[in-house]
Image (cartoon, rainbow, N blue to C red):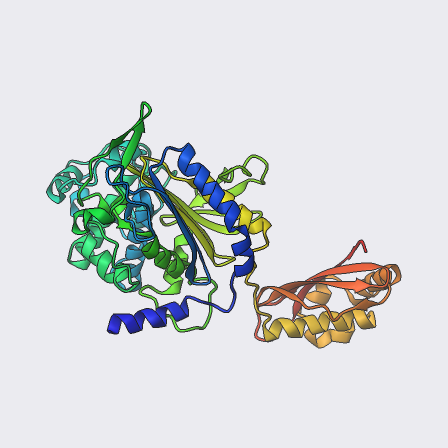
Length: 498
């Protein structure tokens, strides 16, 4: 009963006042269904399921194919898939929860919690020792290890201890570049276990899965009946071959989670609920501020091409690896957080668009069949349909006051009409006579302007606006000073075509 009440309160908190356009999402569904149907067939996936999360809930889910080739059970929202490296976000958020509780710092040395690392030989004499932060962002100096790391999932804890004690060769000095490491996330799993005083799996279940109502999710896949599981297959030489099921072990923290579409939608809804920052009650199992830390990218930036068909013609993304998500700014989609999952028998991909409160995910039961392209193509279909509405930034009282000053300045053609609203630098940067000349020229070119257009907030202390005038438009940007009275520190007014 307590869990049910908690979940009700949580789901209420997952729905900020803004939302995507549900009607336009529905209109785009037929085209999106075709995308994933074609991908399932073309990629030789026995089964596939995808979902769209918006407004704090799973608004659409659809399965294709079968979860096993023997009994040919159809894929359903409750079919269980291994999600491979999308597990890493659960590991990262567990670390951030321990940080939130004061149990560790991201800048602590990893060897503080994994003492077997203390005798390691680093690649150069000036190499820094590995921090927890370096493990989270794949910048600890380990070699890219996807083929090897995936097969380490069932490694016994004792064998992992011996591996760490023996030390590993470095690819680069720590904190010098990004290089994807499953071994690094296995170390994070050990840190979680040692700090929490229990198994990694138990901490994730207690801290994240149970509070979020993810009762069908976990690491020991054998705990669920076979008829619920999507069996993993490899497509090789024109035939499917069943992959061996890997048990839970020391590398589970990097990719061992099994979940359903129904459960995973709860996870994405929880993550998306962290945006925007606000005063609402913080009822989640981890604070919204900690969830937003997932998007803190490392300093190792890259210029990336968007996944999917639009990639070659779209503007390039500024991209970096955050904490278990790839963080990118996209010209059309805004802030994006994404990650794929590739595993023997499984492939998956997820995309979060926090500016719009929308997430898309896909699971398949074919080896390394991630589905990034159709996920991003689906996002672009939603964008083109007008379904991805911006949440907008509320106009603060200070910004409204500053905008009022800008309107008085233009209306009277005199910057001194709002003298009390000017920051101390304003007339030092451009004197009143300069402003009088500029305003006269603007008014002479475009005439009177209707200054009743709303200001669009870009922050609590900044905004932009466009006025329609007799002979054109005036676009403006205002910036307030970081003082208690927040006067105008900068105002720009530019003539635009009618």
